[in-house]
Length: 81
Image 1: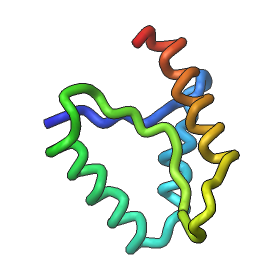
Image 2 (image 1 turned 90 degrees about the vertical axis):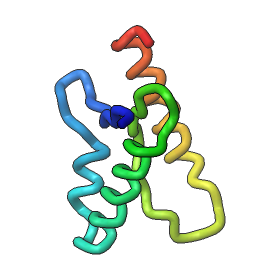
Image 3 (image 1 turned 60 degrees about the vertical axis):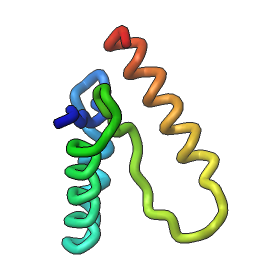
């Protein structure tokens, strides 16, 4: 099994888990099923979930991508990976 971690801010908040908590029961269950699949079949390293969103259009959410990139860089800077 692979390790799935959720991004946390310096103060310990987890915006990804907060986002997941806002989802309806069916969608939240689907997200957790996918996370379990990542744990089972994911890459050989740790998986860090840094961002979540509901895709409602074909357009890319540039702000969401920038947020994910920022959180990734923050995680790497703080955890030395």
